[in-house]
Length: 365
Image 1 (cartoon, rainbow, N blue to C red):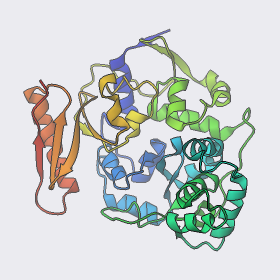
Image 2: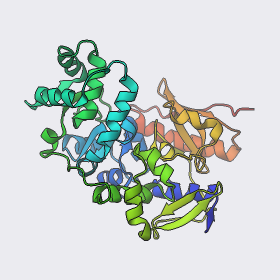
Image 3: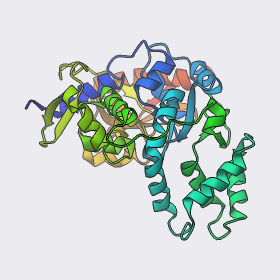
Image 4: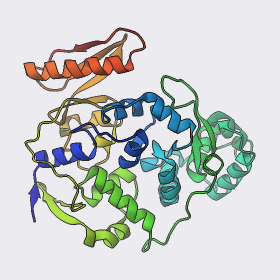
C-alpha cells in the first residue's frame, strides 16, 4: 500500500481546502465544498472564504444568510457551523444523538433527573409561534418549569434537542448582534430529513464522500474528529469499494476518492491567513499534516493561524487596526516578506478606512 508522507498529505489538504490555489467557486459552492465552516465567532468565516476564493465579496455571504441559503446552527462537534440549507436539512438528524450526548457531558449535573425529550417538547411548544427568541429568553421560559437546572443549561439543551438556527443580523459582515433562534423548519420551510437505518443511510454515505473530497486522504478517526460522530462505520463500509487506500507514516490506513487531487509534494504553497477554529486544522484527529504537535493547542484556543509553506508557522490578530503576526518558528527573509505582503492584503480586506498596516514580530530564538 502506498505510503503518503506528511508533506504529501499537506499538499493534498491544501488543495482540497482551496488553500493551494484560490478557487473560482461561488461563495455558496465554496461553503458546500468545505462541508460548512466553523462559525462560533461570527466574523471568522469571512476571513476563511477570503483566503480561499479568488474574488470573494463579503456581501455575497451576507446575502446568502439573509436569503436563507446558508444558515448558522450547532452541528459538527456540537459547535456553531455555517452550512448550506441543503446540508443542514440532510445532516441534522444524523447528528441528533451526538448533540444530546455532548450537551449532557457539559451539563450533566444541572440536567440530573431531567428528560431531554420532555425539554424538547416544551421547547417546540415555546417556539411554535415562529417568533425569534434570544437564548436568554428561552432559558428563562424553560427555567420556570425546571428551576434547578438554570436558564443557561436549559437554553443550551434546546440548541441540541430541537433543530434551530441563529438568525441574521448575527453573522453578517461587520455586524454585531446577539443570538436569536428560530426553528429550522420555520426558517427553511420544511423539517430536516428523518434519520435512516444506520446500515442504509444515503445521507451518511454522502457525508463521508464529501468529507474525503474536502479533507482526504483521511482515516476513519479523522472523519470522526471532524464530525463528532462515531466514525460512520456503516457508511464507510458501504462506500469502501468506491475508495482507494493509502497509509501514512504512522501506519494508519487512509481512504480517499480515486480522482481527488493529490498534488506533487514539491508544489509551492503560498502564505495563507486562517481564521479562528478553521477546519483545515480542526478537521482531523491527526493534525500533524498541517500543524506541529507542539503548537496543536492554538487550534482549540481560538488563535488565528498563518500558513507558511503549507504549515502553521505563526499566529495573527488585529491590534489597533494593525494585523499583528507572531511567528512560532524562525522566519527567513523571504518568509517575512511573503507574510507581510499577504498581511497587508488581509488588512485592506478587513479595514474600513485607508490604513492597511501589518507588523511581523521577531522570530523566536
